[in-house]
Length: 227
Image (cartoon, rainbow, N blue to C red; front, side, top):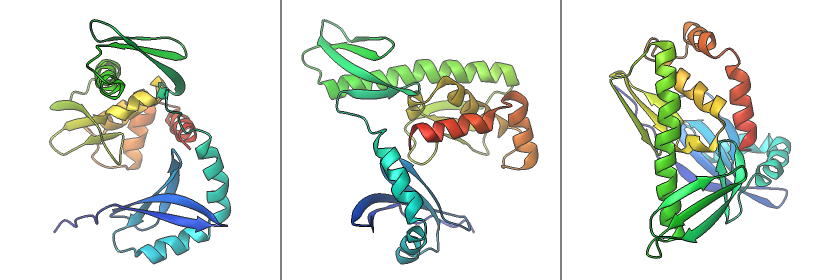
């Protein structure tokens, strides 16, 4: 019988009088792992773990956590900033007759009607741009690997950048537009490789490496960019 994961928990951890927000995600695994994502310490823990045990384990890594919290906070975005394709860019909004946008090296210009708020126009941009950018890279990867899923979707995923199920359905996270193109390519190759190997075995990663020899470097760079 399949075990259902416990619900995620948002909490906080106090180290040296510093309050650190933590997000705990429970899953079927043996050990606790954690990393910062935009100032929040994201913890992946076994389903049987108690909150007190998780915090005790984190306390033993206090030096690392405090150091990387400073690094993570330096990556936080200002109100008028957006992360796009691995870099911070400034958002400029203007009123115009129809919705459209233009992307420059360090700026995003969004033109929208006076009836549309900047929040809604930004959400529309993210949806439109994720469809254009991610779908283009994914289809290119499909052709390169000669692998085609039964269906493909781009949606907001909370705990992963991509999923492939036993029915050969692949879903990629719309948040991938925040990352560099090489990392997006890796995620596409990773999920397409699951059409051949539904696991993370050595043969699976051998297939990933065949199409993305430097995948470890791409993952490392992507993780460093969101610390």
